[in-house]
Amino acid sequence: MGTHHINAESGAFAKTVLMPGDPLRAKWIAETFLKDAKLVTRVRGILGYTGYTKNGTLVSVMASGMGIPSIGIYSYELFTHYGVETIIRIGTAGSYQEHIKCGDLLFAMTASSDSNFANQYKLGINLAPNCDYPLLETAVMAAKNLKVPYHVGNVLSSDVFYDDDHEVWKQYAKLGILGVEMEAYGLYLNALRLKKRAFCILTVSDNFYNDAHLSAAERQNSLVNMVETAILTVEKL
Image (cartoon, rainbow, N blue to C red; front, side, top):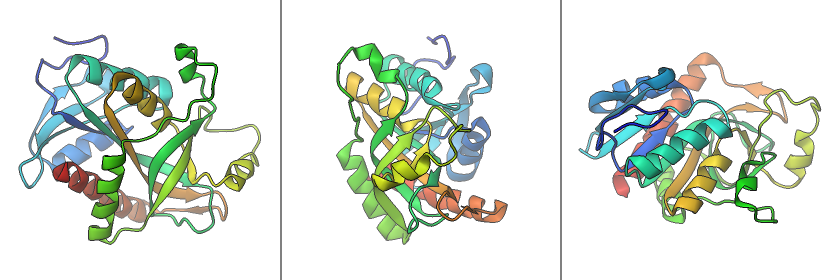
């Protein structure tokens, strides 16, 4: 089989895919949290694996790369060519709100963006794509079971990492946007268009309000919380 960007065989992916941005994080998740994980694709260094969770649920994990165009490509090909029904993005975010601490989880109910990715649909409106509600509800229960702090709401998927206006985040914070990342908007739009399921779980690695940052050790522990929440969500599907 194979596409322009994925060289896996037909049937190589599970129905549900966990999608971090970093290929090495995908490798770490597969080796740390899955049993009998097999590498199924590695085109352009974007690694994808399929294995089993501790309770025997088949799941895949594959990197998305950075930004909406990249996750737009990989999620589209997984949805349309490999029979994937659900993609859960797992990544990091910067918080815009004082009460959201580094290490907390963000559950992206909706995604705003400065991207023009939705222009392809010629809608004439500013579409606000949303996650799959059953996935959100299940993730909330998983976080409660794991006693992991979480926040539900709107996130900003930005095309710009180094913004020329260093204070623009304050305008977004006034509107209650939880924080910023770079991929959820594209994933949610593809899922809506293709009638698939998508969700985004983020670990807060930085806080714009007080300039707080996770240390290397704190980041590792927080990522474990995020992955365990995602896996428990998959197991409950």
